[in-house]
Length: 130
Image 1 (cartoon, rainbow, N blue to C red):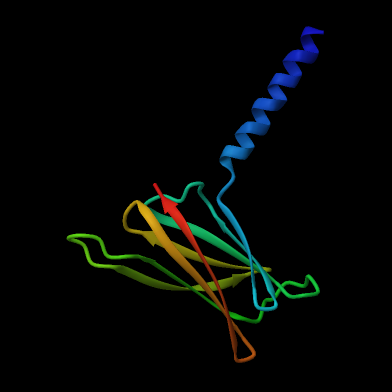
Image 2: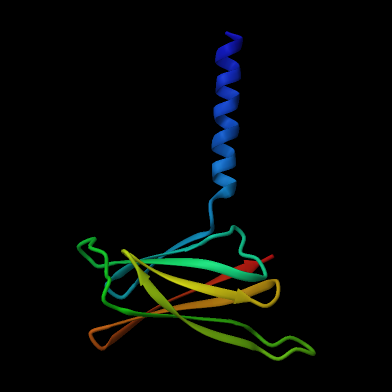
């Protein structure tokens, strides 16, 4: 009985570690696409953050022929101007990869812009960097 309890506790600790190690993941619908944006850290931190963007069409097929850009910004605060940054995401297999360099902690607005066949779809959300 003690062995079963020890094994159960060990499995729970391993599972908890996997949950805390997982990056922040955001899912949205943008036009005809299902978008999953995954940060390598949860929460994102100041400095470099790797971001993976998966785009699927209405049939569930990965979209690999789009242009993907990420705009990220922090509004102006007393004594500090607004910060606005842009980066292109590069195709890596079935996903697009980008690096967001968050210059300070706080709330950031993120806009992922997907352009395909002359049409642009945008996903907007906020993150809190530590």
